[in-house]
Length: 186
Image 1 (cartoon, rainbow, N blue to C red):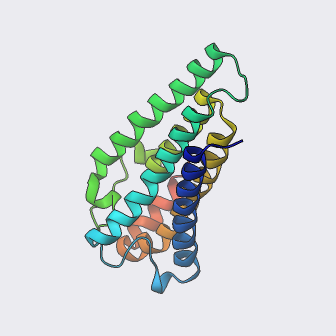
Image 2: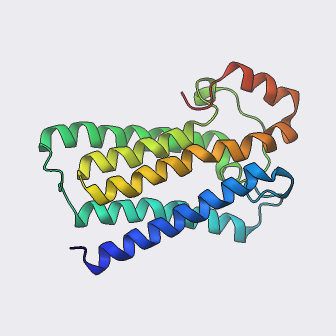
C-alpha cells in the first residue's frame, strides 16, 4: 500500500512529466507555435521548465527512498552500477552546462557548440540526465522510482525532437552540417 508521500511524489512526478511531454509534443507538432525552446526565454518559462524537470528528479528520489530495494536486488550490484551511473551522469551534465552556459540550457540563443562532449552527442546533457535517472532507479531498486524514471527518460528523449527545428532555424547550415556528422544521443 502506498503512503501519502509516495502518492504525492507519483502525482508531482507524473504532472511534471505530462507537462513537459505535452510541451515537447506541441512544439514538435506545431513548430511555428512552439513552447520549447521558447520564442523568448523569459524567466517564467525558464522556471516552469526547470521546476518540471527538477520535480521529476525529486519525485524519483523520494520514491526510491520510500520504496528502497523493493526489487530485492543485491547491494553490491546496485551500488556499483547505480552510483557509477549517477556520478557519470552528473559529471557529464555539469560539463555540458559549463560548456554551453545556463542560459542556453534554459532556451536562450547562444553560440552553437560542436566541440567537447558535443563532438560525440548533440544532446549530452539529456543523455546524462537519462543516465542519472536510470542510475537512481538501479541504486534504489524501487519499482515506483523505476516507473517515474522510465517516463522521465521518455520525456528527456523527446526534448531534442522539439529543439531540432528551432536549432536549424537559428543556426542554419552550420547546424545541418553538425547534425549530419554527430548522432542525436550516443
